[in-house]
Image (cartoon, rainbow, N blue to C red; front, side, top):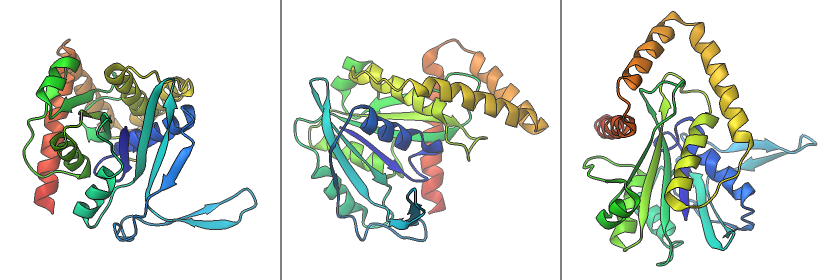
Amino acid sequence: MFIAFEGQDADASEAASSLVKDLIESWGLNDSEILDTDGFYEFRFSEPEIVRDETGRATIAWPGIEVHRGQRLSTPVTIIQGHEPGLKWREFLSLILSQISSDDSVVLLGGLHAEVPHTRPLPVVANTENTALAADLNIDVNGYAGPIGILGLLGVACHRRGLQTINLWVGVPDYLTDSPSPKAELALASAVEKHTGLEIDIPILEEESRAWELGADELVALNPHLVELLKGLEELNDSTELPEASGDAIAAEFERYLRKRGRDK
């Protein structure tokens, strides 16, 4: 089971939400339902959208949660995706947990704006509450304590139910906050393949990732401040050859972000 939410707290540059939407299409997950999520959203922050068909006819898309089921080869797969809730988190948590069976393994997907250069591979933090699973997958045990978002709550709740659950968060350059990032989605997809063994075949992601990086190069080149910022980030990134170093940096960035978020509230 894969879970991702659109919203400020869990989906930097739309990396996680874009990935699950592409997986739904790529894997042909056709058994779908829309959960009853009325009451979980404050529409000033999770705004409804006008959607138009090819004739220009308008319909309203309300924020909500969709569940998509199917199979990837012989493996049953479920994807839960939609908008991050703004209200009644306890009830929302119970609703999501009701969709998860005792046999499911859960992958929670997120994106975080961080101090990373767009010109280097984007790092992905992988951790879990389960010490045995951490050893099996060679990932970190989650030791964070402090304010948390809905994905963090789900991670703890799933673990307390005895479910094998991992968190995958990709770091996205914080100086490109307004840009959806295919490169971040690609990094997250690679992490999913590595830690679940499920093959992801979305060929266009490679091309879109290269185009995004070229566009980011042009944007940075127009701003002397960004040129200097990028140079410093590249030097910091290249100062160590240890892959875990970038992951540790993103993990620390994530903890700082969550604690700041708690203070701001």
